[in-house]
Image (cartoon, rainbow over all chains, first blue to last red; front, side):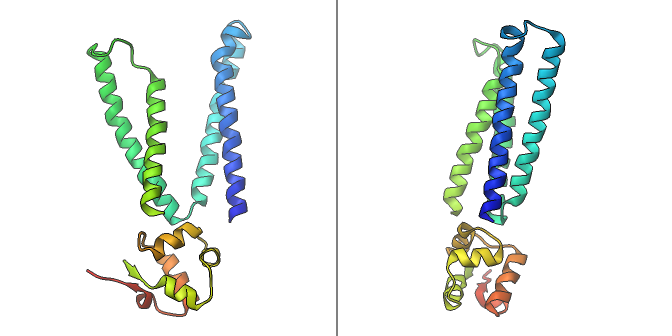
Length: 130
Length: 64
């Protein structure tokens, strides 16, 4: 069980790092490497998209390998993260629309919020059950 | 839910790790069950019942 877990974790880690790498290439490549070449830019974005899908599949495989308590912990964390993201995301959008914040709303801030919320709720739930 | 999993596991001479391996869950899950922080699923309870050679209601004590 442990060996299989390590294998799935390693697999997810590899796909995550390669997704981050292809995201960086698709973001900075057009400007700094291939000077806005349309075909290369399209290929870089498509590669990143395919990589992202494979990363999600690796995560799904790992999730299916969890036992019942681990699934409960992750599902509760995901539910809280989803709820908070919808509520906070829409509030953030309203703040932008009504010009109550001095800058434009950035998707990166929401992605960061999702990551932090998931990690925090995961830590709290692990402490509750384990 | 109150339970006697720790007691029966020790009677069988198993560690949490060994019980987890036989049942097919993690050691942390066995620990959470023994500490009564988590109630296992029916399939897990049945696997324990087979291993301990006792009906489920003998070691999971349901109270309203």
